[in-house]
Length: 374
Image (cartoon, rainbow, N blue to C red; front, side, top):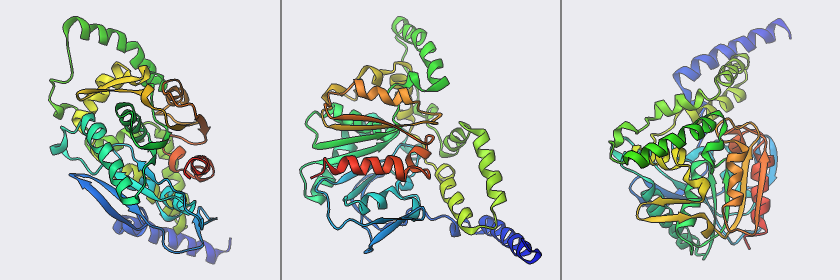
């Protein structure tokens, strides 16, 4: 590289470094696909997306033709708790929302909202028994259809399963889960540790009738900043390597844009409601109820044998949070006769929105649903 080009590159790096500190919004491109709100209940809302007129969309530099024909069954995307709903529309070139619309699907998104400490009493009963049925009904009304498909990421997939298990007649034809930990005791080292501790914990519960439920939800409410730090600490070397790569590529504006937009996922998380955290600890982590296929939610039980719709589940090869086996256990719990399990490249975020997701998880979901959406 000539001296002149080196100087220009160094100058761009300096200006980008200053700009990303003073005007970070210039580099963050999330939530850019047009949408309208079709339903709201408190902090929860349902969005309907539209794709601007075009012949093709660009996914990481590769063109994806926009389908001229539309599938009859719409998709409702269900985010995990603790993250922003726009993770499904991360940036124009890495948007699962845009990709699915280009493949001919009507796309809706369930936005769980941004809980604060004042929402700490939000529990599974609200999410599963109230908001999930309301969101599904809202999509059916707006799309004027009898059935829909659900695609859930992480806890979003578990909430979809719990909803289907609690409502056997739910108008859902297809379900796809991405990195959803059905068996918490098989989720890596943390899961193994909880498996060892669960037996004495359950014995103490039986002997002394100790429950977490009476404890104040303030004790369990997780602020967004703590959640963000916790996720980053699942892979500290990766965080350091990512920052080093950013420094090396500061002169490349496109690289800085992609890095900061992806980084916003973990830098802009939302609170995890205390009541839900308390239930997750007691029912899913200690008792591991989901692995048994039955869990009490509010005044009713969710039984996974009630799930009979077509099922497609995913796990990531390098997921440090949800192991392959933890996600795969869904295969033995439902009554679905049409079911499929896929292991695809990526960690907990990468399997869903990484550079390889479009050619793996996204493509497989779109292809699989195509045969089940007409």
